[in-house]
Length: 491
Image (cartoon, rainbow, N blue to C red; front, side):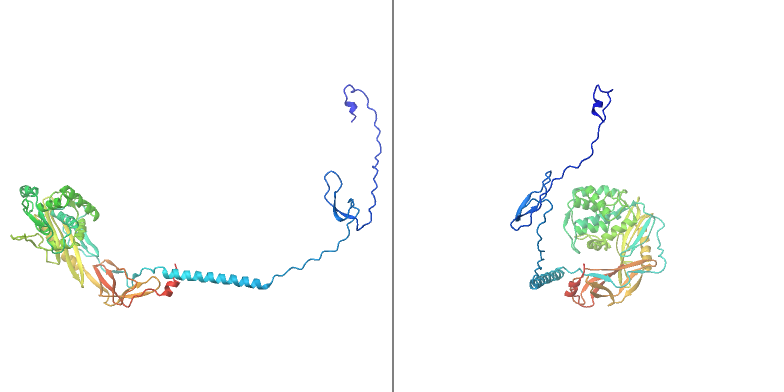
């Protein structure tokens, strides 16, 4: 495009024609001829061109020196022969391998010694006793039908076996003087009495003596205490449990806790500990109709009380004999000494009716068996109706008991396991006899904490079969696990 055409004011002018010239190549500059190679001429090494110059600077190497234009060639150089690699001597390598092998061997030996020492230092497992006979026995037949009373409640329990049966439901009913079992149990728990010992001497308070006229008017059973009278602990408990002395019950509560209310709180707390969920105490004697319980709860209480030696001694007396002379006074448990009955406690009020809790011991095939029972709410004019009903229950329960010998004396019935694969047999020191009744399944187990070492014949545990407990003796020496077993044990 013509620039004049666009010039202002020349819009209408006609452009002159432009003549084109043919293309002519620019003249080439002759390059000077390269001089012949001369050893005296310094060689120039071609370096990278300087940007924008088109020329390469020269660097002197001391052989020849001419501007490098691409025509001249550097003189041929002889090929460089590779230098053979220098092989290290094999001896240092062998020494290094031997050194490393020795280090590994020493480390392995140290590790093995440490592991072995750790295995030997570790304590061996605590030995345990395992049963080698059947873990239960089922008695064939139907459960016995006991002669339950037609009114009130009743329950029969066999120690080590469980509840043989019950009747009359579980509604709480007034306990009457059966409550004194809890009074004696709480007092003996806080003031233990050694077997046969009279215990400390206690002084009757004027308050207890002042209440005697009121209690006589209500026709309560009483010892008839006087102010500042002296009673040993044993005599006080005998008066409580044998002749059911209400005045002594309230005095024991004050001697123990300072007040009747505080003692009653302890009675209720103890009932909770024994699982007597349907029981509530409002007084220590049971005269108050607000003191209520059930036959099954009273069985739980008597089971606990019969484990207290002083309690069992006291309830096994027919009569109360005062210290310093005086007439003996008969208790209400006329079953004592019959049908194996070894203790009990009677109770009666108009609100409660006749109540009685009892314990009987019977030997069944040589196995001592304890029967605990309770009869509550009998509509009779005294506690005698409940005692008679209990006599029928005891007789029937004892007749329903039967026994089976699971293993004779000397039989291998268990073993000691040392925890590392070793066992030592245990022999029964007496026949393993299980007692029960038709329809009952009795578990068989073992108890004991065997030592790591013991001589043959030593007692190290017992086998339990319901009410029976048979000692276990080692059939041979009991030794600790060997060093080999301790070394190779896992875990």
